[in-house]
Amino acid sequence: MTPGEAPPSAPPRGAGRPSGRFARWAVALSPRRKWAFFGSWFALDAVLALVPPVYWTAGAPRFQSGFPLSVCYFLALGAHISAGVVVLYGVEAARGELD
Image 1 (tube, rainbow, N blue to C red):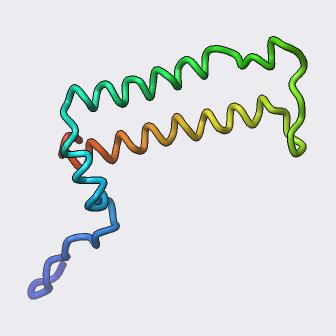
Image 2 (image 1 turned 135 degrees about the vertical axis):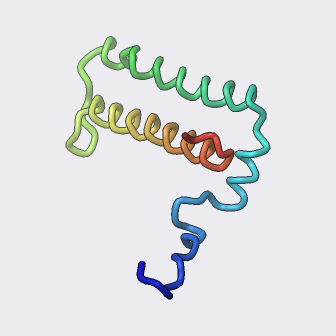
């Protein structure tokens, strides 16, 4: 920045800041309710990731659209785990709890 140049402005609304409705929901969460919500979300993820699906024990996995069902299962599980991490990050950013 050179002398006489204006300081950079705040980032636009969509750049790294949560939307108004989401931010209001995140701030309204009590710490106990946040812990219960995300604790149960990640506990479900752990159970689904560590316990093999029933169809693996029942027999050979079938193919769906050219992919084994086990691949679809792990892709869906990875998306659910990733969504939980992203939403928790958004909640903590809205509440100002990030370091």
